[in-house]
Length: 254
Image (cartoon, rainbow, N blue to C red; front, side):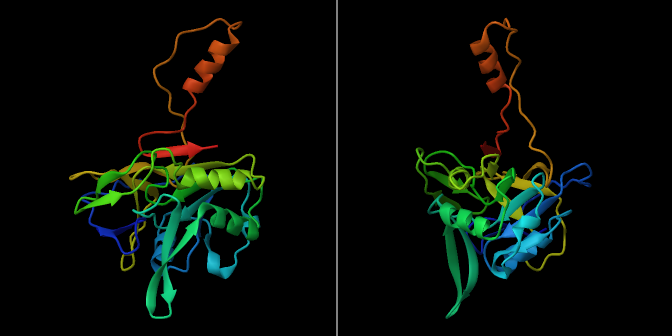
């Protein structure tokens, strides 16, 4: 099985096994937005099982048709060199070239295409879109690359959340995945219904992070001890400790 990485344009991988769910029954309606005129990304978007509408930026789509309780995924390539841009392969004057967009540019684009400010659930199918940490050697199973990051910087998901909040998207959460994100590359006709994430390391395989359109589950650590109702600070701490949507493969900004 051959699928593409939502990593630097042109990257490919032969995963030993891609976990695959059989149904997205019970999931929310979801859509995919492709912010570049990139044929492979378009193909990948169309081969996620259960997708409602694939919106292509160059066709000037009306994102106002997306209901506030739907889920919108952004499909693009990440960058080894920077966590502040996403990328796509587009036509240039002399063949293909890599185009890039910042979080501020993408936020303005979503507003331009009429995404409602009451919209709530945006997720990035972008390699390392949620990676938090310093630069590291990233092994994709075939070769090792330098993932250039600053531990003090928010990843693209965090930057996009801030950019959209500044534009009035007060109810928004933005999910980014911490590793490589898979999609079906050109030349393949398979359909995958779930988000597949791969962490760095020789022998590391794809891990499913739930069906596309599935609600981000709340991950709770071991229960904390019961506190008196009068101890409001303790209750607040308890609630905060048990209501994270983060896990090893994703980070959620709100």
